[in-house]
Image (cartoon, one colour):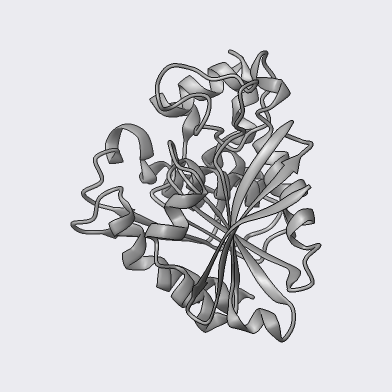
Length: 275
């Protein structure tokens, strides 16, 4: 079942929000979809955006200002919620575990493993749902912010050939080695740290089957930079593996959507070149 719950004219196209049933997650999910004006003439490539901790689909579609650039380049934007939701979905105290904090992994531990399978939702179920629309092609790219930047990087690295390009803002590049990731992975995946490596971008780089170029923007004044994000670990992993990386430290910028909105146009243009 799919229900459109919002529609707004935007830069010659339409910003919609849908509610649809996810069998993978066992709940209803809300997804923001921006259709550029070119979608009325034929199929358009799709950029999947993964948001960060505490976010829903609303943060990106209302704060990033991305629709303007998507309309210029003829790209559909798909921004799903960050976790399963519903009364029967497990939750936890704090903002960094449970609802709003799915971390884009497939949980293996109870009680999380019934619903928290965001990797399979993003990689398989969501694109199948999106691409059932006649305006959407199966040409995909992926990006995200913070927890969603972690999701974009790991999903692209785990699924070679599925995405034309990947970028991230302020990603959690090494969740196995920072407090946010250690808390989430311990709950969702258990205490075996070897199992965590398949969800850690810095660990996946060494065995990557394709050399998909990575574009990462990081605010130099980000309050989470040294404790949670640690982009130097991604640089080190890419240098060791010979993996292409453009890591841009942006002076003065923090972790907010003020930062994202300042550079989202450059990211969408970069993705458009690969599409």
